[in-house]
Amino acid sequence: MTYNIKDIAKIAGVSVSTVSKIINNYTDISASTRNKVLQIIKETGYTPPISSKTPSSKSSYLIGVIFAGMLNIDLTHPFFIEVLNAFKKQMGLLGYDLIFFSNEKFQNGGVNDYLARCWHYNVDGCVLLSGQELETSISNLDQSSIPCIGVDMKLSGSSSGYIMSDNFKLSAKAVEHFYLLGYRDLGYLGSTQESEISNMRESGYRKAIEDLGMSVHENWFLNGDNFFESSGYEAMTRMIATGSLPRAIFAASDQIAIGAMRALKEANISVPDTVAIIGCDDIEACKYTTPSLSTIRQNKNKLGRLAALMLYDLINNQSSTSSFIVEPELIVRESCGASEPS
Image (cartoon, rainbow, N blue to C red; front, top):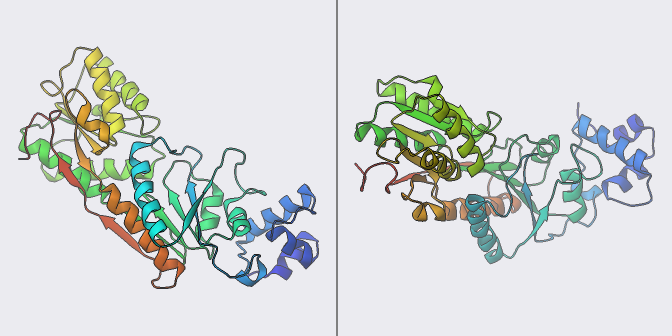
Protein backbone atom coordinates (compact mmCIF):
# COMPACT_ATOMS: atom_id res chain seq x y z
CA MET A 1 0.00 0.00 0.00
CA THR A 2 1.19 3.48 -0.86
CA TYR A 3 0.55 6.02 1.90
CA ASN A 4 0.04 9.77 1.59
CA ILE A 5 0.18 12.52 4.19
CA LYS A 6 -3.56 12.25 4.88
CA ASP A 7 -3.17 8.56 5.68
CA ILE A 8 -0.35 9.32 8.12
CA ALA A 9 -2.45 12.02 9.82
CA LYS A 10 -5.45 9.67 10.12
CA ILE A 11 -3.38 6.81 11.61
CA ALA A 12 -1.74 9.19 14.09
CA GLY A 13 -5.00 10.92 14.98
CA VAL A 14 -3.62 14.38 14.19
CA SER A 15 -4.17 17.00 11.51
CA VAL A 16 -2.42 17.06 8.15
CA SER A 17 -0.83 20.37 9.13
CA THR A 18 0.67 18.74 12.24
CA VAL A 19 2.25 16.00 10.13
CA SER A 20 3.59 18.65 7.74
CA LYS A 21 5.11 20.62 10.62
CA ILE A 22 6.83 17.48 11.96
CA ILE A 23 8.22 16.64 8.53
CA ASN A 24 9.59 20.16 8.29
CA ASN A 25 11.02 20.08 11.84
CA TYR A 26 8.89 22.82 13.37
CA THR A 27 9.46 23.16 17.11
CA ASP A 28 5.86 23.90 18.25
CA ILE A 29 4.91 20.20 18.38
CA SER A 30 5.13 18.12 21.56
CA ALA A 31 7.84 15.46 21.74
CA SER A 32 5.29 12.67 22.23
CA THR A 33 3.27 13.67 19.15
CA ARG A 34 6.43 14.14 17.09
CA ASN A 35 7.81 10.73 18.03
CA LYS A 36 4.46 9.05 17.42
CA VAL A 37 4.15 10.50 13.90
CA LEU A 38 7.78 9.77 13.02
CA GLN A 39 7.34 6.17 14.18
CA ILE A 40 4.27 5.80 11.92
CA ILE A 41 6.21 7.32 9.01
CA LYS A 42 8.99 4.79 9.59
CA GLU A 43 6.60 1.82 9.91
CA THR A 44 4.62 2.71 6.79
CA GLY A 45 7.65 3.61 4.69
CA TYR A 46 6.02 6.91 3.76
CA THR A 47 8.36 9.32 1.97
CA PRO A 48 7.06 12.90 1.67
CA PRO A 49 7.21 14.38 -1.83
CA ILE A 50 9.72 17.17 -2.34
CA SER A 51 6.91 19.72 -2.52
CA SER A 52 5.84 18.93 1.07
CA LYS A 53 9.21 19.82 2.55
CA THR A 54 10.96 23.10 3.17
CA PRO A 55 13.08 24.67 1.91
CA SER A 56 11.82 24.48 -1.65
CA SER A 57 13.18 22.19 -4.32
CA LYS A 58 16.15 24.52 -4.80
CA SER A 59 19.48 22.76 -4.47
CA SER A 60 21.25 23.29 -1.17
CA TYR A 61 24.61 22.05 -2.54
CA LEU A 62 25.00 20.16 0.72
CA ILE A 63 25.99 16.49 0.91
CA GLY A 64 25.30 14.51 4.09
CA VAL A 65 28.12 12.30 5.37
CA ILE A 66 27.01 9.40 7.57
CA PHE A 67 29.26 6.98 9.43
CA ALA A 68 26.72 4.17 9.36
CA GLY A 69 26.11 1.64 12.11
CA MET A 70 26.06 1.48 15.88
CA LEU A 71 29.69 0.33 15.63
CA ASN A 72 31.13 2.74 13.12
CA ILE A 73 34.37 4.16 11.85
CA ASP A 74 35.29 7.78 12.46
CA LEU A 75 37.66 10.46 11.26
CA THR A 76 40.65 8.61 12.69
CA HIS A 77 40.13 5.51 10.53
CA PRO A 78 43.12 5.43 8.11
CA PHE A 79 41.28 3.70 5.24
CA PHE A 80 38.02 5.64 5.26
CA ILE A 81 39.65 9.01 5.91
CA GLU A 82 41.60 8.67 2.65
CA VAL A 83 38.42 7.69 0.81
CA LEU A 84 36.57 10.61 2.39
CA ASN A 85 39.34 13.07 1.50
CA ALA A 86 39.14 12.04 -2.16
CA PHE A 87 35.33 12.28 -1.99
CA LYS A 88 35.49 15.75 -0.41
CA LYS A 89 37.89 17.08 -3.02
CA GLN A 90 35.81 15.79 -5.92
CA MET A 91 32.53 17.09 -4.47
CA GLY A 92 34.25 20.43 -3.85
CA LEU A 93 35.21 20.63 -7.52
CA LEU A 94 31.56 19.97 -8.34
CA GLY A 95 30.46 22.85 -6.06
CA TYR A 96 29.22 20.96 -3.00
CA ASP A 97 29.93 21.24 0.73
CA LEU A 98 29.72 18.40 3.26
CA ILE A 99 27.68 18.18 6.45
CA PHE A 100 28.40 15.40 8.97
CA PHE A 101 25.64 13.57 10.84
CA SER A 102 26.34 11.84 14.17
CA ASN A 103 24.43 9.03 15.86
CA GLU A 104 25.73 9.42 19.40
CA LYS A 105 22.46 10.76 20.87
CA PHE A 106 19.90 8.49 19.24
CA GLN A 107 19.25 4.86 18.44
CA ASN A 108 16.60 3.93 15.86
CA GLY A 109 13.94 6.34 14.65
CA GLY A 110 12.63 9.30 16.56
CA VAL A 111 13.17 12.98 15.98
CA ASN A 112 16.84 12.53 15.15
CA ASP A 113 16.30 9.89 12.47
CA TYR A 114 18.78 10.31 9.58
CA LEU A 115 15.99 10.81 7.05
CA ALA A 116 14.29 13.49 9.16
CA ARG A 117 17.58 15.37 9.53
CA CYS A 118 18.30 15.09 5.82
CA TRP A 119 14.92 16.65 5.14
CA HIS A 120 15.59 19.34 7.72
CA TYR A 121 18.90 20.36 6.14
CA ASN A 122 17.57 19.81 2.62
CA VAL A 123 20.68 17.87 1.58
CA ASP A 124 20.96 17.08 -2.10
CA GLY A 125 22.37 13.62 -1.39
CA CYS A 126 24.28 11.46 1.09
CA VAL A 127 27.36 9.29 1.24
CA LEU A 128 27.22 6.42 3.75
CA LEU A 129 30.45 4.90 5.06
CA SER A 130 30.23 1.26 6.10
CA GLY A 131 29.91 0.30 9.74
CA GLN A 132 28.49 -2.61 11.74
CA GLU A 133 25.08 -3.18 13.35
CA LEU A 134 23.29 -0.83 10.97
CA GLU A 135 20.47 1.27 12.41
CA THR A 136 16.92 0.94 11.06
CA SER A 137 17.16 4.59 10.07
CA ILE A 138 19.87 3.69 7.53
CA SER A 139 17.36 1.52 5.68
CA ASN A 140 14.77 4.28 5.84
CA LEU A 141 17.20 6.71 4.24
CA ASP A 142 18.28 4.18 1.61
CA GLN A 143 14.68 3.55 0.59
CA SER A 144 13.80 7.26 0.42
CA SER A 145 13.94 9.59 -2.59
CA ILE A 146 17.19 11.19 -1.37
CA PRO A 147 20.13 10.11 -3.59
CA CYS A 148 22.61 8.00 -1.61
CA ILE A 149 25.90 6.25 -2.33
CA GLY A 150 27.25 3.59 0.02
CA VAL A 151 31.00 3.05 0.38
CA ASP A 152 31.81 -0.57 1.25
CA MET A 153 28.12 -1.21 1.90
CA LYS A 154 25.36 -2.29 -0.47
CA LEU A 155 22.34 -0.02 -0.85
CA SER A 156 19.21 -1.09 -2.72
CA GLY A 157 16.95 1.96 -2.86
CA SER A 158 15.57 3.32 -6.11
CA SER A 159 17.69 6.47 -5.66
CA SER A 160 20.75 4.72 -4.24
CA GLY A 161 23.95 3.08 -5.41
CA TYR A 162 27.16 1.75 -3.92
CA ILE A 163 30.85 1.31 -4.57
CA MET A 164 33.30 -1.16 -3.07
CA SER A 165 36.40 -3.17 -3.83
CA ASP A 166 36.04 -6.71 -5.13
CA ASN A 167 36.18 -8.41 -1.73
CA PHE A 168 36.19 -11.92 -3.17
CA LYS A 169 39.00 -11.18 -5.58
CA LEU A 170 41.19 -9.47 -2.98
CA SER A 171 40.96 -12.58 -0.79
CA ALA A 172 41.77 -14.80 -3.76
CA LYS A 173 44.85 -12.70 -4.48
CA ALA A 174 46.14 -13.38 -0.96
CA VAL A 175 45.57 -17.14 -1.31
CA GLU A 176 47.19 -17.23 -4.74
CA HIS A 177 50.27 -15.43 -3.47
CA PHE A 178 50.60 -17.71 -0.45
CA TYR A 179 50.22 -20.75 -2.73
CA LEU A 180 52.94 -19.55 -5.09
CA LEU A 181 55.25 -19.13 -2.09
CA GLY A 182 54.65 -22.75 -1.13
CA TYR A 183 52.40 -22.14 1.88
CA ARG A 184 49.58 -24.68 2.27
CA ASP A 185 48.40 -24.22 5.89
CA LEU A 186 46.43 -20.98 5.79
CA GLY A 187 44.56 -19.01 8.45
CA TYR A 188 42.26 -15.99 8.52
CA LEU A 189 41.66 -13.18 11.02
CA GLY A 190 38.41 -11.28 10.50
CA SER A 191 36.21 -8.70 12.12
CA THR A 192 32.97 -9.50 13.91
CA GLN A 193 30.62 -11.91 12.16
CA GLU A 194 28.14 -9.03 12.00
CA SER A 195 30.37 -7.39 9.36
CA GLU A 196 29.25 -8.11 5.81
CA ILE A 197 32.63 -6.99 4.43
CA SER A 198 34.60 -9.33 6.70
CA ASN A 199 32.25 -12.19 5.86
CA MET A 200 32.68 -11.56 2.13
CA ARG A 201 36.45 -11.59 2.49
CA GLU A 202 36.35 -14.78 4.50
CA SER A 203 34.03 -16.45 1.96
CA GLY A 204 36.34 -15.49 -0.91
CA TYR A 205 39.35 -16.74 1.05
CA ARG A 206 37.74 -20.11 1.82
CA LYS A 207 36.65 -20.60 -1.79
CA ALA A 208 40.12 -19.78 -3.15
CA ILE A 209 41.70 -22.28 -0.73
CA GLU A 210 39.30 -24.99 -1.82
CA ASP A 211 39.68 -24.12 -5.52
CA LEU A 212 43.42 -24.80 -5.19
CA GLY A 213 42.76 -28.18 -3.60
CA MET A 214 43.84 -27.22 -0.09
CA SER A 215 41.98 -27.87 3.17
CA VAL A 216 40.27 -25.24 5.31
CA HIS A 217 41.33 -25.61 8.95
CA GLU A 218 38.56 -24.12 11.08
CA ASN A 219 40.78 -23.67 14.16
CA TRP A 220 42.86 -21.15 12.17
CA PHE A 221 39.85 -19.00 11.24
CA LEU A 222 39.11 -16.49 14.00
CA ASN A 223 36.96 -13.37 14.23
CA GLY A 224 37.48 -10.39 16.51
CA ASP A 225 35.25 -7.49 17.51
CA ASN A 226 36.12 -4.99 14.78
CA PHE A 227 38.71 -4.02 12.14
CA PHE A 228 41.14 -2.37 14.58
CA GLU A 229 44.54 -3.39 15.99
CA SER A 230 43.22 -4.46 19.39
CA SER A 231 40.92 -6.98 17.70
CA GLY A 232 43.78 -8.49 15.69
CA TYR A 233 45.98 -8.63 18.77
CA GLU A 234 43.33 -10.40 20.84
CA ALA A 235 42.43 -12.91 18.11
CA MET A 236 46.09 -13.73 17.42
CA THR A 237 46.73 -14.17 21.14
CA ARG A 238 43.89 -16.71 21.28
CA MET A 239 45.32 -18.59 18.32
CA ILE A 240 48.82 -18.66 19.81
CA ALA A 241 47.37 -20.06 23.05
CA THR A 242 46.06 -23.13 21.19
CA GLY A 243 49.62 -24.17 20.38
CA SER A 244 48.76 -24.60 16.70
CA LEU A 245 49.59 -21.96 14.07
CA PRO A 246 49.13 -21.79 10.30
CA ARG A 247 52.06 -21.07 7.99
CA ALA A 248 50.37 -17.94 6.65
CA ILE A 249 47.50 -15.64 7.67
CA PHE A 250 45.33 -13.23 5.72
CA ALA A 251 43.83 -10.45 7.85
CA ALA A 252 40.61 -8.64 6.88
CA SER A 253 42.29 -5.27 7.47
CA ASP A 254 45.80 -3.88 7.84
CA GLN A 255 45.03 -2.83 11.39
CA ILE A 256 44.01 -6.39 12.31
CA ALA A 257 47.26 -7.60 10.71
CA ILE A 258 49.34 -5.06 12.66
CA GLY A 259 47.71 -6.14 15.93
CA ALA A 260 48.40 -9.80 15.06
CA MET A 261 52.05 -9.02 14.30
CA ARG A 262 52.41 -7.38 17.72
CA ALA A 263 51.00 -10.49 19.43
CA LEU A 264 53.38 -12.74 17.48
CA LYS A 265 56.34 -10.55 18.32
CA GLU A 266 55.50 -10.65 22.04
CA ALA A 267 55.36 -14.45 21.80
CA ASN A 268 58.78 -14.50 20.04
CA ILE A 269 57.23 -15.95 16.88
CA SER A 270 58.96 -14.70 13.75
CA VAL A 271 57.12 -12.95 10.91
CA PRO A 272 57.52 -14.10 8.16
CA ASP A 273 59.83 -17.03 8.97
CA THR A 274 57.29 -18.89 11.10
CA VAL A 275 54.02 -17.15 10.20
CA ALA A 276 53.62 -15.01 7.07
CA ILE A 277 50.98 -12.29 7.06
CA ILE A 278 49.10 -10.29 4.43
CA GLY A 279 46.73 -7.46 5.40
CA CYS A 280 44.10 -5.55 3.46
CA ASP A 281 43.67 -1.84 2.57
CA ASP A 282 47.29 -0.57 2.20
CA ILE A 283 47.12 2.14 4.84
CA GLU A 284 50.20 4.35 5.25
CA ALA A 285 51.38 2.49 8.37
CA CYS A 286 52.06 -0.67 6.34
CA LYS A 287 55.33 0.81 5.08
CA TYR A 288 56.65 1.42 8.58
CA THR A 289 55.86 -1.77 10.49
CA THR A 290 58.66 -4.24 11.26
CA PRO A 291 58.61 -6.21 9.04
CA SER A 292 56.81 -4.01 6.53
CA LEU A 293 53.32 -5.31 5.87
CA SER A 294 52.32 -6.97 2.61
CA THR A 295 48.73 -6.10 1.79
CA ILE A 296 45.93 -6.08 -0.74
CA ARG A 297 45.55 -2.45 -1.79
CA GLN A 298 42.14 -0.89 -2.15
CA ASN A 299 42.39 2.15 -4.40
CA LYS A 300 41.14 4.70 -1.88
CA ASN A 301 41.45 7.70 -4.18
CA LYS A 302 39.45 5.97 -6.90
CA LEU A 303 36.79 4.82 -4.42
CA GLY A 304 36.32 8.37 -3.13
CA ARG A 305 36.27 10.07 -6.52
CA LEU A 306 33.93 7.52 -8.07
CA ALA A 307 31.57 7.77 -5.08
CA ALA A 308 31.39 11.54 -5.60
CA LEU A 309 30.80 11.32 -9.35
CA MET A 310 28.19 8.59 -8.98
CA LEU A 311 26.33 10.62 -6.34
CA TYR A 312 26.49 13.72 -8.52
CA ASP A 313 24.94 11.79 -11.41
CA LEU A 314 22.15 10.50 -9.17
CA ILE A 315 21.42 13.99 -7.84
CA ASN A 316 21.24 15.43 -11.34
CA ASN A 317 19.28 12.53 -12.84
CA GLN A 318 22.15 11.70 -15.17
CA SER A 319 22.05 8.04 -14.17
CA SER A 320 19.82 5.58 -12.36
CA THR A 321 20.76 3.49 -9.34
CA SER A 322 24.20 2.02 -9.90
CA SER A 323 27.01 0.00 -8.39
CA PHE A 324 30.70 -0.26 -9.16
CA ILE A 325 33.35 -2.74 -8.06
CA VAL A 326 36.98 -1.55 -7.93
CA GLU A 327 39.84 -3.93 -8.72
CA PRO A 328 42.24 -4.65 -5.79
CA GLU A 329 46.03 -4.91 -6.11
CA LEU A 330 48.59 -7.09 -4.31
CA ILE A 331 51.37 -5.07 -2.67
CA VAL A 332 54.31 -7.26 -1.67
CA ARG A 333 56.51 -6.21 1.24
CA GLU A 334 58.42 -8.18 3.87
CA SER A 335 55.71 -9.77 6.05
CA CYS A 336 54.69 -12.41 3.50
CA GLY A 337 58.24 -13.74 3.01
CA ALA A 338 58.78 -12.55 -0.56
CA SER A 339 60.63 -9.48 -1.77
CA GLU A 340 58.64 -9.22 -4.99
CA PRO A 341 55.40 -10.60 -6.48
CA SER A 342 55.49 -14.20 -7.68
